[in-house]
Amino acid sequence: MVGPLVKGLMIVLKHFASKPITVHYPKEKVGSLERYRGLQAIRRNPDGSLKCVACGLCEVVCPPKAIKIEIGEAENGRRYPISYTLDGYRCIYCGFCEDVCPVNAIYLTREYENVRYSKEELLLDKKVLMERGEIVK
Image (tube, rainbow, N blue to C red; front, side, top):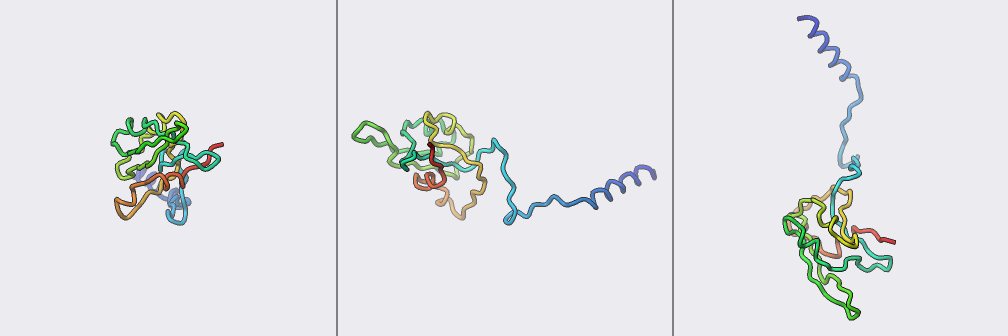
């Protein structure tokens, strides 16, 4: 009976003297894993235009139907999204939209902070998604 008690106390003393691993979240940030799928973004061309060709595949493949695209066509025949809306409240971050995109326009970043005060703030339009996005060379 004394053996297990002493053994348990030794384990407690060992961990009591070790450095704590607590992270103070707002001030200290923990990085995400390399394959983490976080907030959505749309890539832009070097001239600043939207890389999306409005094929509509992301809208079709989205399981919760969180993506809505209104498609337009320019004089030169190139299709472009007039409006691109992503409902961040409904999105399940599955990454299907990223996988199916033929031009790699939409992607999921490694950012994980997506807290908003109302549902309306989670309706992400083309402008917000482009601000998050990167310019592809």
